[in-house]
Length: 368
Length: 88
Ligand code: SF4
Ligand code: SF4
Image (tube, rainbow over all chains, first blue to last red; front, side, top):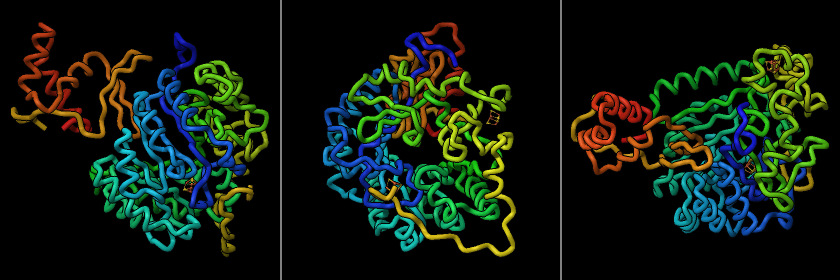
């Protein structure tokens, strides 16, 4: 890590979780198990200040996310604040609540792009996975975004229930006019870890999907960008989580808590700072939470002496904690981790007669 | 692609060219991606406003950077940017 004259290398991206409220209940939601109540959310003026500070700190992109950010009645004000701070502003939405008037107001406020989630290509299956009738709203939202001329990304979290629908999912995203399709294999912490037995795919499903992606890449010839987020449970390699702890991005949770990674809220003793108490620059440079797993000092073996440590940073801290109880251990997804058996035992060859997967625990308030 | 002479390059609508005052570099910013521009790439792209054609861009740069291999490097660079889809 090269030292920056002003401190640590500056972050490029801010994930602004404007609310944990959401009409959907996806069983893999990346929000924490303990959802923040709406009454504790930052105000519009507080977000304005945070976004200005982020731009001054060096942030270039902001993703206005949730929950469902459209539930914020003052979203237009927040978008305007982000755009006037000079940030490239993307709305990350389920599509529910995005009608023509709302999109016109957001575009007028300076919104640059939209990322829309879809759960399955089949409307009924999509609604079932989301735990809410939402497919029709998504379809309408995609059409509106295209009409408004904004770049559209479609995000699909992949798991056992939709990996076999990869072809129709890509067809759907292309038909909706997506410039970019993010095929994100489920990362297992928080709600997804709770639902792991229902969501974990088989090796065969993943192998077929991987081939499918290669086929589609050739067919689309770069017209639509396909991004395949690796299923780290199956690869035997740790993912370079967040590009390193406190290295490229930061997350501000609905109540102003600032985290190096959206899942880090679950780490015990992290004592994350809050924008209500400190400026973002101090938080980035000096808070204990942001320095805790920065660089390589904190690493134990096998990472400490491993030649891959500058590429993957020892993997994901939240996954290490979720599976071993110690966030400073090597990510068990790595085949070199002494804890890799925890994952191998789940992803090894399937037994001859597999029991049917259990149902979902849908995300929601007070269900964590 | 060999660019037709009448080509008037312009940034693609989703792509923003901006100067980063914190890092003191020019950037191309688009959804989910930032490209850090080296050297005079930002200067060249600033001329791609959809009004100037390729010859005009080359001539202006040749005047600004006398002795630089502008006539060969600039069209090649813009071809690459076009292939990436960042200008059209
Ligand atoms: S993953 Fe689903 S439940 Fe979670 S915020 Fe997104 S749309 Fe809402
Ligand atoms: S041992 Fe650590 S640094 Fe080496 S590959 Fe595994 S996770 Fe990465």
